[in-house]
Length: 142
Image (cartoon, rainbow, N blue to C red; front, side):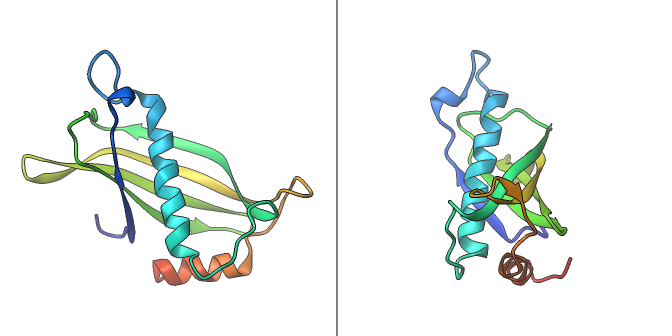
């Protein structure tokens, strides 16, 4: 997946599937969350973060289902930052699996993350050290 610097292995559990044998749509946000946590661990690894103070919250999520995902799929969630604004940034996702020797996109998505101070319960600007670390990780300027 060109343009994606981070990918996370997704373990699909039997309980994620529904009576039709494919992953129920309710589980995809959890898969995105797993990838987001690993992304932050990698992109912000040199920053000490106190998540009880300044951080980010999920403000919006979009999902586009392209193909069904099955228990037997070797699935990976790719993630990248596609935009950084003053108080928010966008993360893009692509869930893939190799089928018949070819990597296929099963789902694409986007989340909008908003800078947030948990003590004051207010939105804040994206911390400069976060912006710098993400830009360095993605190797581009927004």
